[in-house]
Amino acid sequence: MKPICLSLSVLLFTLINLSFIAPEESIDSENTENNSFNLSDFEVRERLDKLDGMMDLKYNSLVEKNIRLYLGRRKRTLANIIGKSETYFPLFEHYLEVNQLPDELKYLSIVESALNPRAKSPVGASGLWQFMRRTGLEYGLKIDSYIDERNDPIRSTEASFNLLRDLYKRYDDWNLALAAYNCGPGNVNKAIRRSGSTDFWKISQYLPSETRNYVPAFIATVYVMNYYQAHGVQSKPTAYKFQDVKTVTLYETSSFFKISKIAEIEIETVKQLNPAYKRNFIPKSKRGNYLTLPSNAMRTFKNKLRQEKLNNFYKSKNHDYYDFMNIPPDMICSTYAVQKGESLEYIAKLLRCSSDDIMQWNKLPFASVFNGQELIVYFPKVKTENQNLKTEVSLKFEKEGERIEKKASNFLYHFIKKGENLGQISTYYPDVTLSEIIKLNNLSGSVKLISGDKIKIKSL
Image (cartoon, rainbow, N blue to C red; front, side):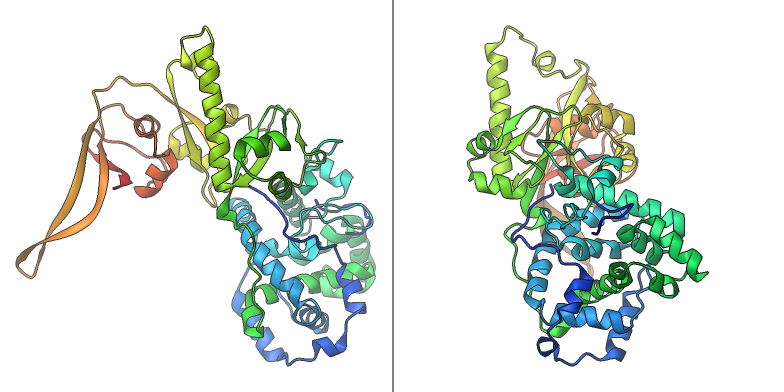
């Protein structure tokens, strides 16, 4: 992104270091020979219309040039981008759904950085969303000698969608919002005054040259990412898909060397998955810093840290584990993994607590959570009888007058006692998380547990 009044800023990592190339510069250097393939205007228009999204995806000569660029000279780059989208898009889609923004906006990161969280522009913009320093700070990103959250996939994504939402509120038009995203509201306002119109295509001649091509480049990106298979483009597999990594929040200092040793992985993997840290070191933070690792390594990391805490407890003179771990004595501690599209308000309603509770328990600076985030949650202790367990091994039903016994999936069931809640029940089963119980029973909204009813705990 060029130096302007306003620009943009698990999760996770980059497989290749693709330097950011402005769309206008790419077209100027286009190799016609490498782009000599059939591209039917009718088919492209029809396909764009079928997407039926919230944004106006107009097809014109500039869009066509950008499509030819992707399917020609940048075909290999496109294959890499498609692969890396499996790492980042689930994160983007979660925030878009929570904020009720158009799903197409996830493709803007491709125009900005080719999905490279370490991408830097010649003028100092950085990260997946190419935030300039000033704008990054304005939207809550931390930038100092230890950390640059413009390169943090989670925090930069949250910040970028907040900025995009603000721009849309200002212009009530997504094309104008995207233009302002690229060249700043000042340039867009000036173009509107000079043209006497609020139609992007009519004001574009008064915009900076890069911005004139910015919206067409975005539309072309939306097209190729949805129809690349129709043009014979194959995705290049990524090392880690979104579901292959986990992200936790750390509040204390930790070095990449220590993390790699505890998690039993190469330090290069830690570096690759955590591009926001400048010195292979995660600084102390009251609001917490994110650490992303492969799922298996994260499991090892968390288990060893948990064991270390237990060892410290056993060595201490404190005989009350809840007091030692700062858990309120009348509460039960559990964890909850955020699912795609879930907001903090939804989770609070589901777990029958308040949003403020969850924010306080997890030291969240904002009322925002991301897909896959593991939250600490507490539930009040209730005196109950010993839990009554039962395993059902078969299901009987009537069919055509015959009594048939059909083998069903075996489940471990928990029979609910008076006063029990989901958090308390989950603590009875160390190998099962609260999230898994909720998902297995298709629970949603405000869950009311009735004494005598049963819920599934796990498959057997």
